[in-house]
Image: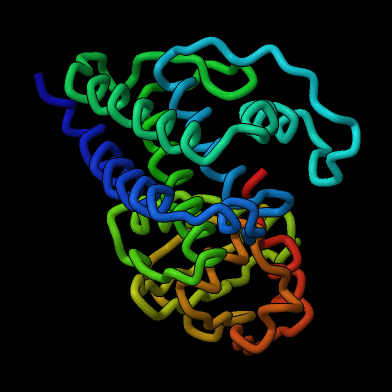
Length: 274
């Protein structure tokens, strides 16, 4: 049995990142488990717990019955509460328990992938009980594990895989959000164009055009005379878009040309992950 061709790239990206995470987890010493990551409120242990928990949900395991503490400053929304449940329930697990559960979960997920026969459009249970397509679920797992792999690499000082299969899935997921960021959130002028020039391990040039109705569309064609141009490296793009760094902290790594107020508004709304 082989995966549907639409699902295979996401399965490959997930596999590449989960193997990297597993390798890092196996080599952690006790103090490293509690090291802070760029993901707000989460330690290395918390990231690994989240990855385990979300893949258990992909396997159809029941969610834990667990009461969250009231003093978690980084938990403010229902979505964050949902995600925190799988994390907090493992906060007192030992390192051997964590690595053993991760290894077992990966084995089970690999078996699931080998036996997957469902069509990409099959509806499955997503976060908060919302029904999503199987393709969307696979895509978001690939995105999620790659971003969290990078969180771990940053926290542990082990850079790498910025151009791995998961990086390209992440690029596409984040680019889909750009028209809304520019046209609606940053309220870019109608009949304008904003250019994003990203360099580094993953390179791309994209234009968001805002039409006369104020709707934004993403194009690969460069714009002549854009209202603003933002030039930055791929790692900074990811960290901004995923809320890992503030625009102020990344100011020296982002070059803006044209309308400075518009560029600042775009950067203020650049984080798109919940």
